[in-house]
Amino acid sequence: MPADITRTSALTRSLLAPNAGPMTLDGTNSYLIGAPDAPALVVVDPGPLHEGHLAALAAAGRVELVLITHRHADHTAGSVRFAELTGAPVRAFDAEHCVNGDPLNDGELLSVAGTSIRVIATPGHTDDSVCLHLPGDGDAGSVITGDTILGRGTTIIDGSLADYLASLESLRSLGPATVLPAHGPVLPDLAAICTAYLKHRHERLDQVRAALGELGSAATVSQVTDLVYAQTDAAVRFAAEASVRAQLAYLRTQA
Image 1: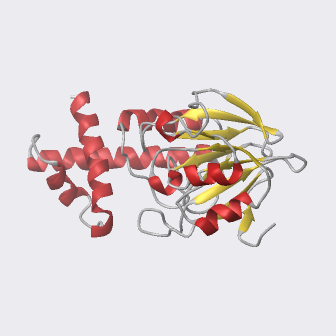
Image 2: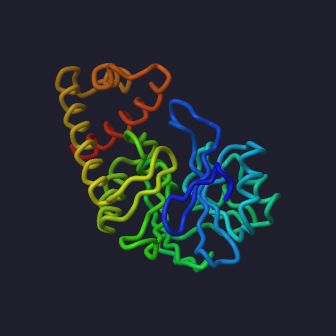
Image 3: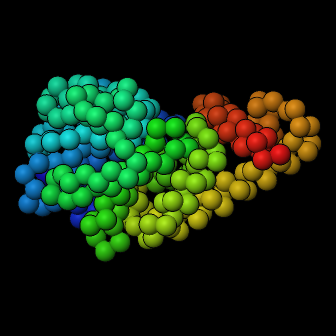
């Protein structure tokens, strides 16, 4: 195994893309799935269009399938090139990000790379976000979470907050599975992390409610962000505003 490729669970390895930044943390984790005796691999999120990264992934073994967790470019920009390198189809929930493959379906069970992968639609971070459940990966299984759950910090809500809360509840029902995030380190106990994420989201909603009480019900996204995310670095201000926009939409539909 090349030194850069790290064992992350019994059935997975990862390769960190060289695209560290305020939104990507240390970079994007591209995952390789395969049983020890499997003749081929599945790659999840080939990442940015970086020839060295894509070549290292392609050299890890024969790739039979590429899966995409969601549309953001730090996960998908290398997809077309990686399909050229490997000949493997690329499948995503959104047909726009498929290459010679069909869109993924919620609940679909894939029998590939000597194991089973269940597709779970988890909208919220984006409308097209999916997580990949590997029930046979260790005692409690594992879940590749894309950006729905990060290895450090919390994620931007670039879709519907109601959908995101429902997605967290759905993931929590899987129990103490290993969390394999697209950014940051591997984490134990998916259920516990989902509980913490849900608590955080409800605390943020309380803060937004309080801000509306101070600013008035017609307050803008920018005004609420100034109050609730006052310490946010300017480099990720847009992400804070996206989350506020989702929170305001959620509260206004609940009113």
